[in-house]
Amino acid sequence: MLQRGFKPMSVRRALHRGMVACVAALGFVTLAAHAQELRIATADCSQPVHLIAKDVPLSTVLTDLSLSLHFVVAYHSQTDPRVTTDTREPATDLVRKLARNMNFSLEETPDAHCAEGRRIARLSVLPDPAGGNRATVASARPAWQTPEMERIARLGMRDYLTSHGFPEQPMEELAVH
Image (cartoon, rainbow, N blue to C red):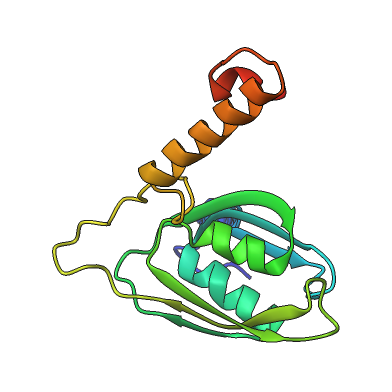
């Protein structure tokens, strides 16, 4: 029995619209899931950690690593850069690489089961400076290598070369290629 005012086409149209809405919602959820992807494999301090992250906030990456590797993380920075990487490295090196542009403190503790005899105990990402400007990394040279020490090393190399019958030449030319 059909009721008055009932139109089979309107039911089909409503079902079709509902199905389209579900497919669109599923598409958006899939896009959101693909936009942020984070996988951590081999979470053991005795082996390199395999991290795959795609457009994930640094705080999320560090928190998940801390849960996998059993260390404490304290993230106090107001900035939270996005991380995209596919890398396999020892845990300490990986954490240092991820936090390299942040002001951070890394504490390690001795552990005989780990590759280098120690593991991460705590990572603190410190608050941003008051002015908002990040300090730039000084130089790649070690702290002990001052200009005076470099001058003394050059003099020592020159004296060594001349005492062994070699002509004086710049240190850069002596580098092994």
